[in-house]
Length: 399
Image 1 (tube, rainbow, N blue to C red):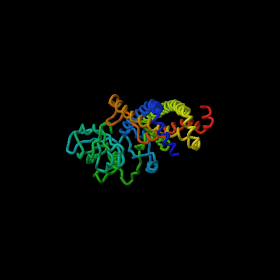
Image 2: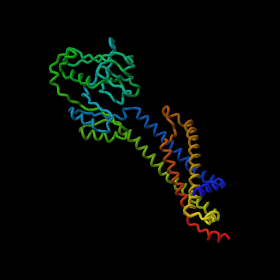
Image 3: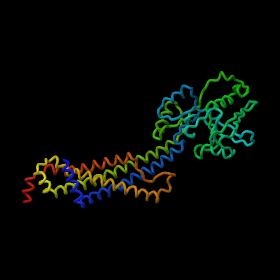
Image 4: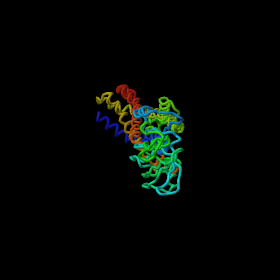
């Protein structure tokens, strides 16, 4: 078996034209496919990355007037598709006036519940009570930065005293992370604001009210939810609406459009690859089979030396394996070169750091396995021909 393998290798390099032709066929088919596959990966990954860079694309907000108990909201913690969630207070109570400590300029801003794990916040940042994150627009208009001290101020009808909440800005959110003037803070602070508007007594802040705080029954208007993945968004939105019986708002249409584009690109590329594989397979079958037919006399002479047919069938299989190795190696080298050229010519519109044509290591290994399988299957016809070779008949015909 070892001698047949060595003989096949020597014969392959001796018949360089055969090796060159089959390698050229493989390269001519594989390089365009690799480039198409790489560009699809690069562009689609850039689009997905751009969408994931904005956490709002994973966000689901309940809308309308509804009332949820703590038990209704607590059940969401067991849903595996949820990355983060927090309850919300009623919409009429989620606006506050904001100013710098000791300043005079007031700006109204929406206050948004947040907490540890909120995708809108920088990774690892928590928002304990007394600390907030502000949107870029609010920070720009009030001329504040991280570590600044601000006040949240509200005046409710029938209240003789304002609610003043001193806060420390721990971070200014980047542009696009949160639109408009917004302040993100821990939900318990929002609960205090709602209690203030509902005329409850707030002894911590020295505010007297018509109702006792201990008599207050916690309830929520809705929830603010983030999905783990873009693929989970539509199903999670539907499940929330069914379970909680409320309308929701999310960017499901835009997300589904992008995910649908990826599926269509995969289908188109799969059909193209299937047709190319059929053509490549047919070319290689006739190539390997004709090569065995051309060397029938040589193989018959080897068989007369006592080499069994099964061992002789390895001759075209070894040559096919080497041909696939050369073809794949050259194809990937040319793909890398073509990818760099394409990136320079057409990659300017992609986000920073994005590559126009890319194939991951796992994908490359899978491609190699598929190509080796295709080539060795094509060589099977030649191996079957060698297996059925009758040395006496071949030598008698040639004589």
